[in-house]
Length: 467
Image (cartoon, rainbow, N blue to C red; front, side, top):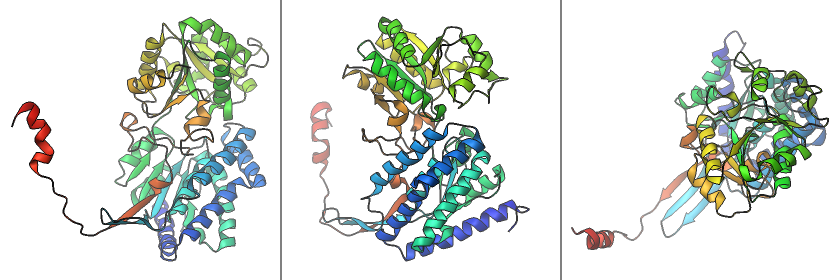
């Protein structure tokens, strides 16, 4: 099938995937599913392949840096493999004599996965591993700039599949540079859609008529309060903000600092590579060109970003990121949104209550439901923040980028796709993980009757308000 008939091309790919999936399920076992997941994981984690994928991603997308992508490819995949190692995804996974219900794990079928250029290796690998662990086939639709990396990844996976006798058609991608037409057809005919990336793709996923797992936009705000260890907070924010040149949706876009320690925290940022910029208008004019982020500045190394923003020689040597003082929030104040660069907006709050209000206001403009952070030694304030703002996660005293998508030092599942709940227009509020790629069939047996009387249900209510 040629690209002259793009719809038929996608339909043929999905048909091959569906045939491969049926055979995979028919001959399935937990061992087979586990081996396929291990094969897909080794395809990205083997050191030489990992480096080649990272180099290809930076070379073809112009986003991020090789060293951090190598770390991301390795740690995200290693963490995922830890999470799924003992997960039961085949056969009987539950048998409850009390309810009389036996649960049998079943695949979803063919997964259609739309993945972004910011993580063209790690994100599709994560989706592929989850998919085959649960007995599915998967067809990936990368962004145009992510095509070469995705091609390399899938070639590596097919090489590993050949070693264990797994059909290559189980993992495929939409070939060529991709198109909205091809992606739309994939969204329509897959059995489940997973979308990470542009909000346009997210909206298309949810309106495609196919069950969808699509995630909202990130715009992380982190509070630093008067009880925090300021230098530790500054170090963690720097590490998070600069990792892979801020390509992660979990990278801080704003920090809200309580007035009492504002100057001290600015000093801590300066000691850890954050250059304070007091003229926010100059940054806005250079970072956005006709309303679009300046491609010369986004996801670039420090020197390249500083030059693109016209600040060469105007910031201290060794500057890792820019901390821009601002107070505007909303569509007319772009610094309150996502910047995909080593630029951090800095807001000054009168007190903790004001910091919470500012955080909620910023995330209501962009990033609702995703996540927020707090650096504090007050054990009650994280819960106060969690109850006050539209967020699915509050990350406490951690480098946000590393913590939100799963860490070896917290309990979040390893993932590159964070659901944002109803606040972000999503169907899930958890990190996308293996359980989302599986469904179950329930065998339901009769049990002794368990029917309450009206008095069992309403006695307390009647006693309070009468019948």
